[in-house]
Length: 290
Image 1 (cartoon, one colour):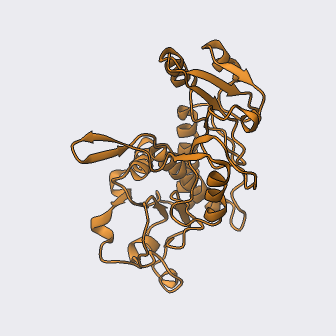
Image 2 (cartoon, rainbow, N blue to C red; image 1 turned 120 degrees about the vertical axis):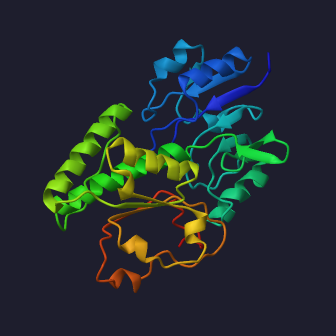
């Protein structure tokens, strides 16, 4: 037995239904000797009963705050912006280390309470001598989902000019998502007489490869999917290819200032086709966001 207790908290970020642990991974942890407490959750994509069935102990939502100090708190996205000190070890995406808005307040809570942050974005393991890889990454799925919404938005704008895309709900499985996006593309093609051209920047990374795969899965021809990475962007923007594409999917990892990919002047181009920007990277408060 490991003697370590993990506490899976219920996510509190709006619209967040994902879970840092699945019932399968939870089961593997229990088999390895960990004690696992799982908060009941009205928002998690998995039912509470699925965790109870594999031997986890269900505990009240939000009970991590009062959990014993030696319990490790496992989550996915950042905590609510509150001020009380954090006494536990927390495993989560904190979105602090690229100077996102409010990072000082978030990090200050840990030393004040004696807690520790293991940020999932920066946890790595050595996979070969001198070569490291992320332990946990959701990038591929983020790119896949983001590209799906971008294509739906492209079609929506064509058929509903001046009206924003309505809010969307999660799909029960991948096949239903693919079916819905194919239907949207068909509607957009009927209105415009063409298929969209999609430019993915960061196409060789986890996030970008997910976006490219979605485009392929919904039937876009390869020539309609422009796949850019460091080689194509090394000259620096703005890039006319972005504004001449129908959809721009941004999937880069950015930790330093670079020239803007687009600016107001480039958007004035008479050759502009761009109607959708999908910023999967979505570091909106990062001072280096292009």
